[in-house]
Image (cartoon, rainbow, N blue to C red):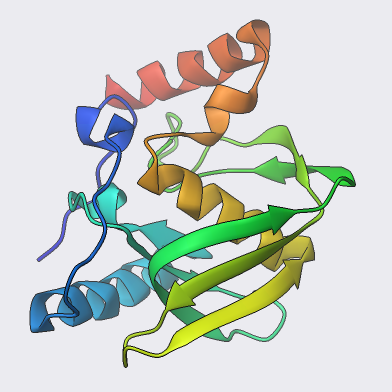
Length: 167
């Protein structure tokens, strides 16, 4: 059974290695991650959030509820247009055991390529929430958290809430 890793766990800061082979372990982990994501009302979950330092993630388009299982995802291009949206993370929890949220500026749309669970190479242009989610989750694969985009003062406000969660 996979366990959620929380802010402060060093695995969340590791750069993940590419998946060489789509093994039953990878497929099983992705299936369990989808269940965890849904159980916690999340829209995305990356492998390091469950203690696996491999480049794969699961995400859901909240508008259509379509689930994407992405192996070795790569953002190929980002729009010059940016948008500010509130972000939270299942690994960054406050004292109420719920994600802490903050406004983050990111590109409005991206083109992403990945391998799906069947080994098929796919790519898509994503905008709106799916673009936001895939950027957030691919950041996890590089050891980057959404709080890294915040100003020092705003990051400290978020981290005060996170520290109260751990007590």
